[in-house]
Image 1 (cartoon, helix red, strand yellow):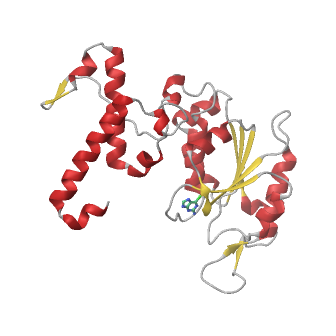
Image 2 (cartoon, helix red, strand yellow; image 1 turned 30 degrees about the vertical axis):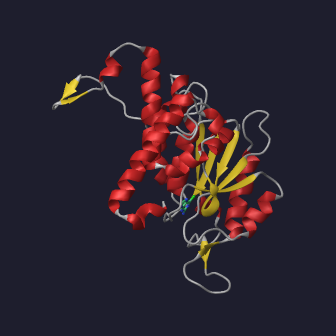
Image 3 (tube, protein in one colour; image 1 turned 60 degrees about the vertical axis):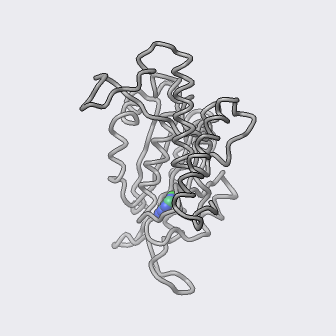
Length: 272
Ligand code: 6GU
């Protein structure tokens, strides 16, 4: 996979030289190319921003410099037979980036990221490239970053670990909390390693039993309980068809304990 990133802070991306992503690059699975946006300015100050039309706080990134930069990167051409890149514009006002979206990106031969600083990029840039490329405006969560660079790191790492050959164990990708499949919309439960007792805390006995089927069932119970506790919104989204009898039993227990706790907290809290 080829990834181009255009930013006024290419040095922000040194973490992509490390660990899993760094290894994928060394092994030629990932070809990441960084570009300094200011290389496409023409004034001595290398200006990339200007005041917003209509007034308001902050600055807006100028369309001309982004246009020249994106055209130049596209003109370099991507991998053999890739055609044009899919353009990803990180913005807090974009569609949510999810594991599903990451799986989609992992099937693309060429991605182009355009992280912005300030209040964002003049909206005509997205309008222009929408007519030429597939353009996604994506957000990584309901909070506001100082710029899109950190979001690009998040997206690239999420996508990179899905590429064939990047993770040794394909099962660990299949078991991901948000991956389509049996664990879809379930958080992973606790994990343990040696020693069997640490500071008086034993590892749950079942994990030492060697009963693979019972261990799998125990792990699923833990996943259901943890999801109920941490992400009730995900429980509400579970497909009833994906739940077996034991799943329903575990969730019923969670609800009973939850109701009992709410009752003890007083009738005001009984609404949820
Ligand atoms: Cl993609 N960019 C910025 N600046 N803030 C964000 C974001 C992106 N996603 C969540 N917050």
